[in-house]
Image (tube, rainbow, N blue to C red; front, side, top):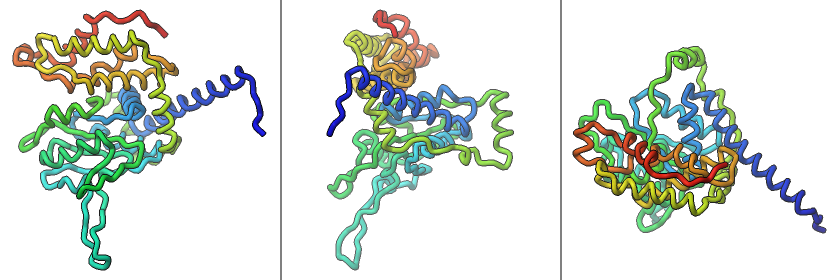
Length: 331
């Protein structure tokens, strides 16, 4: 027999379940902090992208902890992680997989590529060919690859963390705007402070920092958290605010190409993830303002006038945030 419970008790149970799910996201960040020192704001944004079901582009110099961060997230969430070091000889089939003839059976059999995992770390994506870069398009957008007319689904959740650096870029192929737009955010980790670097040097004396990272979630937990983020309420005034910000990027005198509708969806989803981490089930303007520049800076194309004036995309977007009136919605 089913036990009948009163409405208030049921609501209390649902609220507790929701709080437990939120706390789990915070636990993941705390575990990753054991391996990545002094980059708390970056870790929060990466967690937001994961909860929003997006992909991450990290533009930075080598050696600042990009790979360590990706591995730490995969370990804390018990996700299958694969890494590809992109070079000119990496083929699209290395990402998508390929069919090979089995002489014993007389059939072609599929061998999966590196892309079919939960978390793919694509190192120095700008150092490979355009064909291989394009192989990531379907993978990032559809979470699937098609080989010989057959579609193969990636395990969920599926996240791509790609890196590129601009040091020694001879022979490198910059990502085209169409592929840049596939990334939810573009982040820069940067150098640590003197204090953080001292801590880093102490912590790594004969110890691998990843050994300290404990698994505190599973793939199923991440999917459940993402569903909670999808349910975060976005008031019509919030959606109107996002649309006005997008319109402002398309009409700005220094911007040649504004943010696409895909970018508007990314802003909405990231704002919902930001609200979720702040233990709210609704979005407020501050959520949008916190993620707006990171989501949009790589999606706009500056005109020659802006480049000559030395104006950066981030500066323009910060000005747009100041100019567009925000709705009067508060938490």
